[in-house]
Length: 312
Image (cartoon, rainbow, N blue to C red; front, side, top):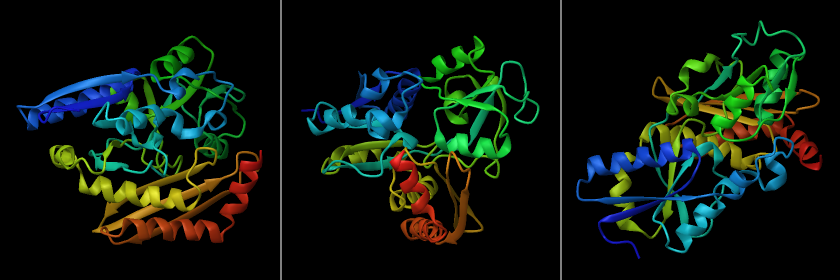
């Protein structure tokens, strides 16, 4: 059992995951000066299966990055798990949940090209690396003449492969690059109209046991209400559409003029049919807004696209 004045953070061991865990640790220590915070590193199935030619969807989807962390929580070997929210599945094991959502960093995608080409100026036929069907579908709409090739691995591995010439350009999340002091390698970041982000991208989620009231109280100050409203809308939309990484679903919510706004997209990686929906709702009703956008996409034929991709 954890000591009353101690919190054990379980995390993946990649540089980005450790940055995230250390960020939460620093925030906790600055707010609770009597607290002891320990970080426990775990290699997940997703970290051990990094071959570029094996799609994430084929080894278990997003769950491969969180399963071992959740097992540590269930076994009371840790008190909280810190996640990149875009890696967190739509559902949780019984007794666990996302109790804290830290203030979101940039949710957008970054174009990285050591030669300095932009997405408009890169020569036709150039190899572009990305592990994301969501990104690939939208990039193909911008530049159908490029060669999109799977790319997996942690941020450092992907950057190294690009710098060594395996890829002319790669696409990564802005937030991860900035957190690892790799912001200078970003040639440009995509606007939502170019490449709509992944659900939850840029946000850190903290998962813990729902009955651990003491830990939840210690974390409460980190919960950021605008971020929670936005990502809950995005995740509700994603859940209503099936909520897995095999389908190119994009979602981005934000608050504007005291309204919660949500854009959603579903696309097909072969036919390049892309369905889009946008609705506004009340800030305190993110679930309702997410389901409304999902319903709009479903009415346009999203499930036919999703079912076709799932059969592949």
